Image (cartoon, rainbow, N blue to C red; front, side, top):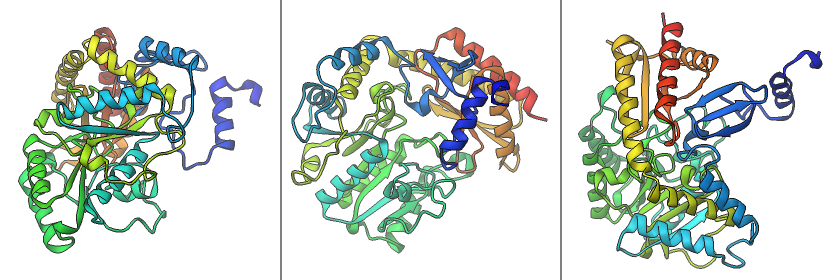
Length: 430
């Protein structure tokens, strides 16, 4: 039987035997190689990758700068644990990120491995600085799969399941979603109601927010909302944490999404595209806040691994020298125009939204009621894969298709992907 199966089928059968069911794989594929915005499976089939490792590959697969930096670092040192002895790439990366986030103000950076680690350590830093326990996060936000990360995440399925009891002193409030009738003013009123009924502001260590919700549906927080949050945080001595794990490093047309609002956050969490595909995360923040934990309170065996830090320095070089932010803006405008053209043809596309090259379409059963249509969303994704385009869904109702193509995607590849999406919509929708 096994001899008659394709290599993909054989490997997927092995995956089912050896990998637990709780690890979801969005597409029934096994990939073998990749370059730029393209991937090939183990049977040689080629796909356009508009997922990018879920926002990890803004520079694309196997970017030459990243590959060369990692190869060079391999000949020097691969791992030492920064808690044992320092090494140049970690220090150089901390210096560069502190300058990019803080400008002329004193900022510092510390590195970890996963996005969830960055979020958890940002919470630790904020609590150490304020000596307060409570954290406010937002409904629809995603902040990781660890126990605290899951608690901070503002979605029940599939993340919470029966994994509780969850971490205490975490409170959720409304995130603006004008398409669903919740504007910035209403969201700010909900925050004030939270202060009045559930947690007094003087007990709150931090407010944690994604400037554009990622897994929650690619919902941008408008500048007026972010600036109001900054004002409220300063009024009450609360640390404002911007989770830039998915929005960071050019995805929205700025290096960081908070730049669209013209603010400078107290703490920023970074990961995903920071290191061009290698595991690396970090917290960058005001020096006075970052220095609050006593020595030994921060760290991790693999945090700030030398190979990952070298890759991240190459990523920053690419942004400084290769015009990637301008490219993100141009690609984003082209993608937005194409999606709005498709929206005019298909009533199932309720809204097109996003910033820069971080765009999404919300799929609804009826434009009048705006009822989410998760089943149609999955049909579109499956049909797109059959045509050679990889995309994934998001949103609290899993009815939003998000686009995370690399910033090195060519105009021809973008046009090809839009053509595949257009055909998938035509074939998947009634």
